Structure formats: structure tokens, C-alpha cells
Image (cartoon, rainbow, N blue to C red; front, top):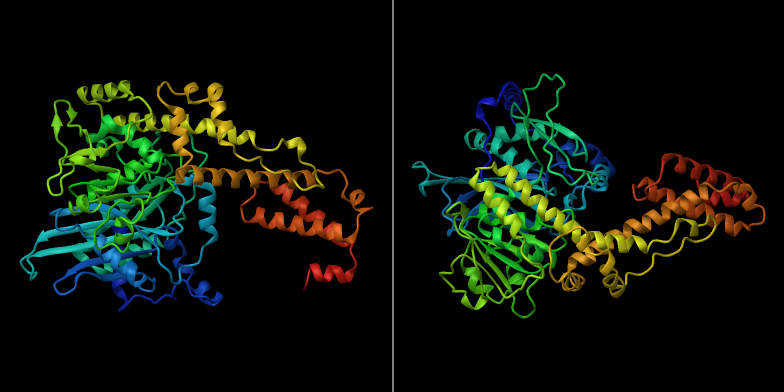
Length: 598
């Protein structure tokens, strides 16, 4: 898919930025990010706003002698390892089987290698604390958002102009960065480096992505307006409202979402199997997606993993993957079970290499069959052919839940009535959201029952422990508090939960919920201490060791709370600090000096 915005809107703001960039003979050098000394970090502060959105911008070109080559990295001081550079080069070009002419956009995801990295800013922690878990920054992977152009050019020895502009980020904002590339890339291919420097300088002026806020992001004379999702948002389809306040900037281009793809367009050929694919994603099953182009492959993979929202996708996934990837051997080995990964590919060679995988989805170019796009069929893996595999979902998996025929009827009726595709997408997204919620709500209710009662938390004792999650107890609770209360779909819910317990998604969900509950327990304990009637009375019959222990515990809780790990009110923090000072005042001077060194 290629996002284009009106080039006629490239106005005075971009012209001024470009002129100021060209006025200097060379761009100002900025200290390398990731430097160890505090002075270097302070000097690198001008890149902090840029780093809140992007790691770097890369330009990949085709060299007759080297093949794909990294032509430019901006900012020039950003450090990529040789393995990361190689991955970016190979993944930024469609392979020879795609035959992409003109402009195309797609995305990839690579594993971050070792080496120095930019420091983890407090703003990053602030974003993650307020963002939905499925949209938090990637701690160990980079996203690459690609705008590739291949056109005939007689001035080039090979006869074709081939170049990719790549945005590298830790944020999964595919819609936003596709829109940004749609503005920047065509202009860059004409003007080259000065344009890129001007754009990066503009991004360095953007406000940080703050969950729950609608931001105006000016670039090249256009303002992109987008709302950053928050974890407290209601799960509904609601595009941002255009800001009404007067501004010297031009009217903004309002993006409906930072990350949501057009699900109906992506799932056109697999609508009859959406629930089966949802189950495969829920269970973290290995899945190979073979598509005609990188755009179709990456969009299908991203659409599949988005099926589980608001549940975080805890397995690995690669929207676009090639035989040149550094993890190729790791993913294709036959000496162990296939890894829990979703791979998007375009090279039919993978059909032969990964024919031992349990699930392979082959999609072709969209074709209409009456009013409904032609649907792929479920096929046995034994029918896979090495070279000429027809579109289909090759699997022996039997879905646990019955197909929702009413949903298919509504979507078909929408096609017949020529209902807008964004409405069809909203219908499909709501169905998947309700399905995920129906599955997760019983787990949430059972997990909440493991939390100690508030009345059992006393000020001067260690808080009680969260009770262990017992799978059989949970399964027994489904009879009266199961998904049948919120979902009309029939099927083997019990069997689905049993398989879910063995998946990485259960482990990821449980660890996240247990961590949140532990923090809540610590916060309640801190509140209980601060609401105690009289700390002086408690200290009267206590030894120095017990008072010191109280000071150390309160300090530890304050550090956790100030690092946004504990959900406590500011008044509670102030009272805790007062208690520390009061307790310290009762200790001998020499002990105070040890606890509070100058």
C-alpha cells in the first residue's frame, strides 16, 4: 500500500527549512547518541525529540557491484551494527519474485543487536506507562517503514532507478509513518539529502508522543494530526476530532489512527477463516504468510497480530522476511520444533524450506467472486507443491469455536450495499475485539480473585502474597463465569483455554497482570502506612533496627513510586516523606549520617 498526500500543500514552512539547511555548507555535527559521559548526553539533548519518534532514517540504493547498499544514515552519528545494516539493506528492497514497479510501501521488523544505544529517556518510560501494552516501545527490536521506488531511468547503467527511504523506529505506528513517508519520500527522491536534513530538523521539534493527547505534527508545510492511544481508552472505533483552535499552520491532515490498518482490505481473501486465524494467533502458533508483494505480506502479518488487541502479541513476528535475513537459519532449522513466529514472505522458496511448518497461508492477488472477494480454502499440508502452490490455508488445525456466519452475512450485505470500507473494517474490528474480550474477561476475573483483600493489609506487617494461579480451579469457574456470558459463539472453549495455557501469550499476560497486582499491593501497603494514626506512638517501643528498617522500606517504595511503578497519589508520597523525616529524627546522629550521607 502506498500512502500519498497532496504535494501542492508543501508550503512556506518546508521551503524555509530547506533554505536554512542549504545555507550552511555542511550540517552541524551533533555528539553521538549513546555516549557514556553525562556531558555527551547533555550535548545530545537536541536530538531528544527526534529520538522520541525515530531512531534514524536510512536510504538504501542498488549498487551494481555491491547489490543493496546503505547510502545514508541520518542522523549520521546513529550507530547501527554491521548485522543491522545488512538486514536493513536486504529488507528494504522487494526480492526478485515481487516485480514491484513504481512506488510501494511496506514494513519489516528486525532484532536489535549489541552495541551502544541511545539512553532510555524518562519520556520513554512515561509513554510506556500510559500506552496500551500492545503499543509500547519495542525494547529489543526495530521497526522499519519502507517507501521503495523502482522506475525506468535511461541515465542509470542498469536502466532503473531503485531506491528506498526507511524510517527506523521502536514505535509500532505503521499508519502514521506510512503517511509521513508518503509526504517525504517523493520529495526526497527529487531533492535528495538537503530535503532529508530539513525533515529531520522538523521532527526534532515535534512534541513527544503522549498517550491520550491529540498532536499536531508539522512537516514539509503539512500538519499531520493524530491522537496517541492511551491504555484507558474505551475500545471503540473513534477517529480523532479536528482541533478547532486557530493556528498559523495550514488545516491539518487528520489521521484516523497511529497504527490500525484497514482490516477489511487485508482480510478480503480470508474472511471465512478469520476466526481460525484468530485462534492460531491466540495460541502463538507458527505461521508462514506467502504473498505476491512485500506490501501484501507485511500488511497481512500486521493485521493478524492486531487481531488480539488489547492483548499484547508476545511471540516474534516479521512482517517481511527474506532468505538473506540473519535469522534465516534459526527460523528454518529442522532439528527442533518450528519457533513461535509469524513470517511474511514473497519468495516461493520458503514453501519448500518450511513445508514442515504446521500452518502456511498462501494469498494471491485480490480477485472478486460475485460480490465477495474470492475466498481461499482450507487445505491439507500434504497438498503443498514446491513451485506452484495455489492460494489457501494449509493446516490440519481444527478450530475450537464455531464460525460466526452472522458476521459474514453482515459483511456480504455491506459489500452489496457498497458500504464504505472503513465501516466494514470497524465491523470486523469490533467482532475481533469482542471475541478477545470474551476470552480474556474470565481470566481477568479469576486473576482479580487472587488478590489479597484490602482489609488484610496492615501498616506494620509485610503485605500478604498474591495467591497462585491454579489452572484447574480456573477451568472449573468457567461453568458459571465463562465466555458464554458475553459471547454467543458455541464451541470447545475449555479446550481452547487448555491450549492457551501452553502458549507464550498466557505467560506474557500472566506476568504483566501479576506485576501490576504486585505494584498495587505495594501501593496499598504504602497507603496503609501513611494512613496510620500516629507514627510516633508506633516508634515508642521499637528498636533502632526496626526504625531503620521502616526508613529503608519507605525509601524503597518512594523510589518505585517516583519511577512511575506504583499507582499512588501525590499526597501519599508527601506523607511518606514526612514519616521518613520523623523516623530519622529519632535516630542517633551517627546513624543519621550513615543513612543520609552528605
